[in-house]
Amino acid sequence: MRLLRPILSLVLVLVTTLLVSCSGPSQAKIPTVYSPEKIVQLQSYREPIASARESMETLKGFIQEQNWTDTRTFIHGPFGALRQDMSIASKKLLQKDQKPAQDLAKELFGHFEKIDAAAKARNSLLAQEQYIEAIKDFDSYLNLIPTNN
Image 1: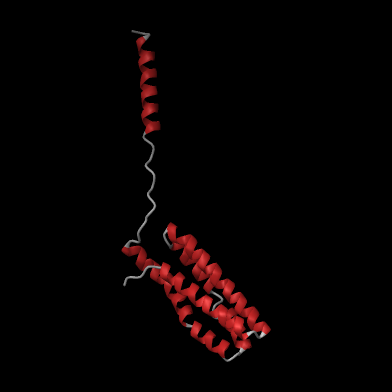
Image 2: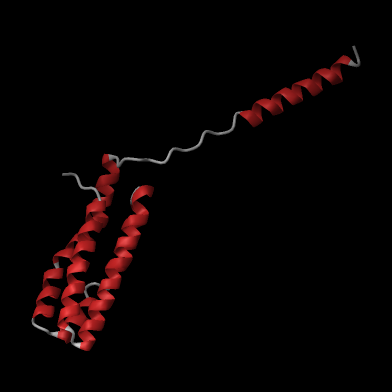
């Protein structure tokens, strides 16, 4: 009987260890669709970006008028906080949408840099081409953010 107790204790320890090690926590699932609550939350991030998109018409007017000073000022002024807004919004999207959103934001700001360089060089054709590309990227980015509609 004395020999049986230590063996029984050892067996119980081994069974307990086995059960604990095999019953690890289940992996958290990554969401694949937007919940209504998430969509509402994303709207607060979408609003300043959509507002900046609407103000692109002002930039278009400056480019068409070849008003290079205001073109450059507008890119650096009203669009100054846009990079941060887009970065925050991109991080709040579903994981599958984050990389495309970050890539589009990067491309958009590349177009802004080229518009700025074109304005500095007084190159109307290049500025207009880059403006058109910026609009496409802007719209594609906004399409990644779901809406209630």
